[in-house]
Length: 371
Image (cartoon, rainbow, N blue to C red; front, side, top):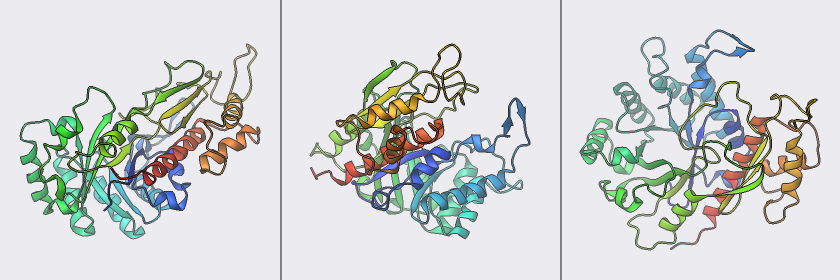
């Protein structure tokens, strides 16, 4: 499907991620194949204050998600993983797996979806993947966690899975997922050595995420976090000449690699996450008295207007800011530096950060020289 100079961002399919993807520039989109994870949150009953409404119809939710995929990514190839909802959403109409249902809707929109699976998914999930592979003829994406690679009998399990799908390696995109970056993780070379027929897979991608779970331990003001996931991948696959096969880069953008919903009723700090060449710039403010508090309250606690100050400081930093024309996210930040309109919401600032991050990474990869 693609070579090593390609980017696979892993996105939990919420509004910030969805619209960040939609706003990518045309040339940057060519360098990207997103891996979309639908989260359980969209299947929960909506809340108004402390009151809980009626749970939405799962079939309608899945159909809406397919429509969102079309609006954000049109008919370009994407990977779709429903592992986060596999055990939570019941069969549609009592018989169809959610993956099979969303695939049917996707066909009517002519979406180019490659289903994602792994060696330890449920039998129902694997059957839905097999059906998609047979009907759509786009192959599959095999997502391998490090713990799965280290299990005894791993190679045999993979061969059995491909036999079940009636596919060989040339029809499978292989994604090795560390999830979170840790210097103590097993070496990539060692893990790749456990994969049978490494050179025969349609594509090879290595994913990890170095962004922390949250910003609670960050000091107020500006600080930086090393993009260790990026530096590690670049060092192993583009600076190193002895690697058996070069892999594409995948990360979790500016979010933590393990899925976790925010604590309910938690009010996060008013902060900015901004990707630089080898670091993330963190501009951390205080948590406002409420999520909608625009200005200081009677006790002098700052509100959402802190984003104006963050944007102004960032845009005045010639060594950090990429310029208002770099991406949609940068144009948004530049606008807020002039205090135009409301300061924004947590969702739109996350959207701007993700959009900027994907733009930075896709262009970094495009500009890499060969080993």
